Image 1 (cartoon, rainbow, N blue to C red):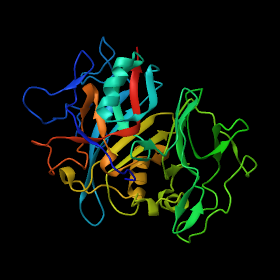
Image 2: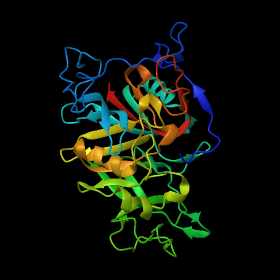
Image 3: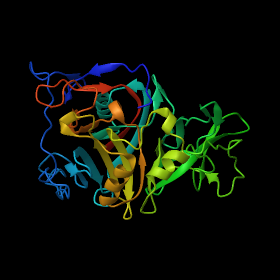
Length: 359
């Protein structure tokens, strides 16, 4: 939602053997393929049992299920979306791969990953916040920080130092969520430090830390994930819905995140037994969906078993790409409100999350 001067790109998501994206016949409409399980119920199918090739009958590998949901909301209306559950214990070849670029569409991330030789992509969703083609959220690949979270900003004339949520996979394969601020080293490089909370900022009262946090701030430690993506706010922490509190303390109201109203959203979460949950909901009337508030999104992630979860960028950026590079949802920049006959419009984004299977 914080993006500016976004380049809209209309792509068809039929992935060809040459690795390029092209239209399929003369039809300019993307039709979502069959999903894992029965595809129509919020509890989802069990998918991923695998045939001789290790894939289920719907084309997703063992350990990966993709489901659709329709939730009735308080006060009327519905929220529609898609989510993936990634079980690394059921299939150790599954990969969580945040990716950084100069900005490209989610379907292009999908195609480029397929060409990279790293593995076979099955799900891609949008990543963190950005302005133009510049990421303003944390992104770590193979232990190297590719993009640094914003270290300062101005709210109502006051400078503040945001300490914001990030989601990472550690060297042992486990997932962590924490609040991160990037500090400067003696050689002028930057590195992420984790903190036990978003510290002492509170946008509701317009009170902000007078100085940035340091390595001596209580509870601080060097955060060393192998792969990580940041955005915020924290949605779920130790099984509790903390979305509203952290929305204000991570200072997002002035930036256009509109956390207390319903919009398209994207989220990442982890269950107590190490599964990954990736979710995108539609909003703004697309497919009849109103979207979620951030507290509603947190409740949804908890209902899917998440004990930790963070919010990623939303609005027109929220895009869920499934197998074969097909956009399953209806990004809100797409004209109209129904998928039938629609030309999907994706945003070019500098960070994304790829779920793949290693070769």
